[in-house]
Image 1 (cartoon, helix red, strand yellow):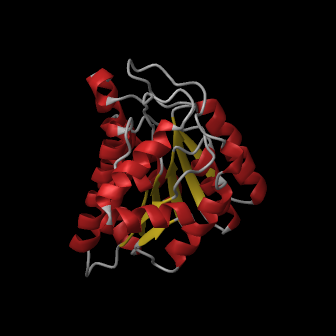
Image 2 (spheres, rainbow, N blue to C red; image 1 turned 60 degrees about the horizontal axis):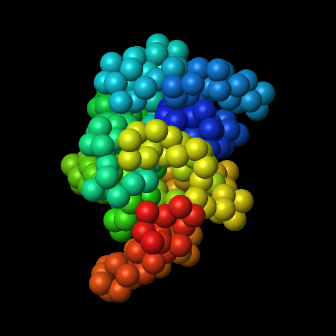
Length: 267
């Protein structure tokens, strides 16, 4: 019987790349996102590769949607081997100007969405001694100015996954936290501003960033090798290292880096 992977946020970016990469590896896939039409297009691409795929319209911030995603996956495939918690949203505004509903929305999607999906999928993953994956960020190790909500959600994700891994030290569960660094995707275009509206345009040069297909390939190798933490890009690894040993220096460096972004709130 083929292995089964669930991927949230599968309609674009890293999620779509994961859907195709898992399909190429012989998995059947259950794909979740809010945009049903885009999901349907990804399903067709996966089926062209030879996978069996289903699209489940899911708002991961809603517990019942997450529960339904797991139930539909089990009804269709009878097992879950991998859960990729990839659905996420970013934000860009200084905290003093931020509507608190924006922070709540970011936490509901990035953190609680992972919690809900993991909670309902976990018994099935444990039965296969499978993998729970969290697509985190360097912002989960180093707080980024003008991204207080995003950084908080990724710090929370990292802590949750570390605790889950330790709880299951003897159960055979594999838990992977992968931190891609800046990766070309739609997340910055859809990032929320201070009032909750979409940013609309990325402040970074997406073409120069790591591509989502590379992230997906590294993730699958990490699952196969039962890796615990993967930090990607030289910049990402250096940021985590320097932040651990030289936090005051990194305060200045990170501030100056964000200050140089187009339309930065720091002038």
